[in-house]
Length: 464
Ligand code: SF4
Image (cartoon, rainbow, N blue to C red; front, side, top):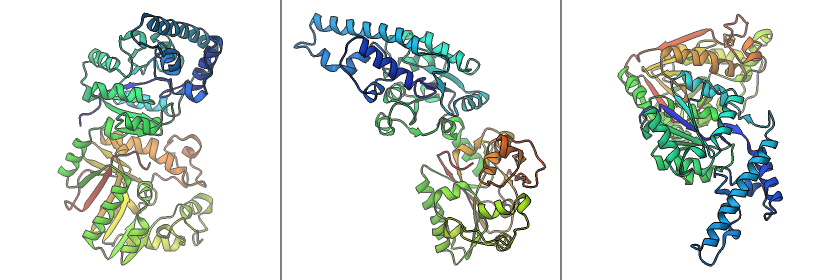
């Protein structure tokens, strides 16, 4: 797959939370024009259509005529479309007070990061271009959005591909280099019809199933997930470079597949002693209990609750037993945990995650105690790593920066007792806190011996 150069975004329900003001406007329009009553849900389903096309979809019974070719039919249809559009626009301007429309969570930071990566960001909307550019300005996106195309800029609106094709022509991009992001089937159909890649978001006005049925390649629950490596990074290049550097790599699409690949590797290697290092992605695979069951000896090396108690002012509670969620991360004392970490360095197989992957084919970690970094570097005969494609960055420097600014502060939040500056601000301040988690930095540009490390790359946003 070619790297994505341009992202064409829908506005309503995808980046701008306009649903309330749209539904209120639509209901007021229906009342003023004495049209048949419709529920909020029925009105919501119209979002994505142009205003001129909305009456025919919302009131199909008003358009029933003995012959669809009759002049009267077309006249009546056009009259209703025009009066609906004019009334809606007038009422919308009254309801659209400052602050009535906001951006959805993670939209602004994600757009900033995509822009930093050199990706062109544009909007293709069914609303008029005047209102679109005003929103772009009011919501602080003027520096991020390079182009907007509204219903009045095209002859054929969504789901016709014209808005996408016109945008691509302007930026001299191919459909295969474009990602269309939207919240309704109309957005997805527009992208599919143009031959572009498509990603649906579930928090807007359409359902996951509607978007999948329309041909969406992916559907995500959070705007931040559109940054997944599949769309913004060159995964094939990353895998090629990692393999060139001695790492074994396989790409899977789902968490279930990754689960099975871990078990397959375990059956192939037949290790006597297996240890697993702390990793949110590994926990998401829900595989550790099975690994423990299949292993003659399993060493538990992490427990968030033990780490949390051990941190900072509670360091003296080193022998406290803490219950944990499942048998592979079950109740264990701090003393035993540290012993297991030492013993894990001589295990046959060590399984954990990786914090950052660079397109140049290198792997990167930040560790608090260093037990994960030690084990992946030397000791265990084999290492299995699991990671989502969201961990891929364009350069080693960007991978380390991502870990410091995103992964580490979020990881601190898993430990409620940690008192680092990032726990309060969410931003790294290169602290000297007693419970600083960024004590060991590891970059691995090559795997030695070749094939010792097996990376299972999952085409999803997983872990931190
Ligand atoms: S160095 Fe300190 S402030 Fe920065 S991410 Fe690590 S723990 Fe947080």
